[in-house]
Length: 115
Length: 112
Image (cartoon, rainbow over all chains, first blue to last red; front, side):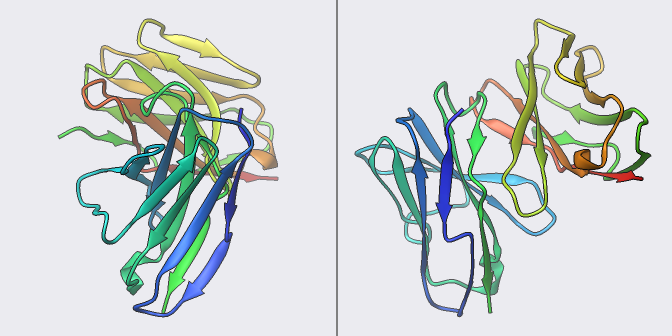
């Protein structure tokens, strides 16, 4: 399995600001994904980070709010823009060598609190 | 719509006992299922998976059972230890969207 490092591990941010979360994988992976886990809830897929092209967003998530970059096969960033308290969640990077519907490996997550 | 749900949001067991965590799914076309363990402050960790052409799969101290007739998935943990305390999620690949859909999670609390 891949080793996935996320930074920051946690942050407390002010309303209206933006935070960029980094995801670094120790090996090249085919697919990278970003998930959100709201307090006490399950995981919801935000988008698929595509290498060299625009991310593919799930219903309810838009690029202006959650811009994503993936410049190569080992790195991706997720930005949470113009934050509000409703954005307080754990944001998780995940990877797969097989596909979005197959075994995923997750990073340790970024705990975001918006005041 | 599609949904994956758990019968018990919290399960409390004594150390050394066996644990059974249940999960219901609604899409009969789902062909792949997976269990994750999430400890506090950590990301989900893969435990075991199973495809729809099987009804049982065993790992180290864990067994996953799949009953396609009633669309039910369970995770059995033998000789539960304090380190097993975590939230457990089931997930299914519905096939149509080829994405994992996660259930709501069960908190397993192991009492010493």
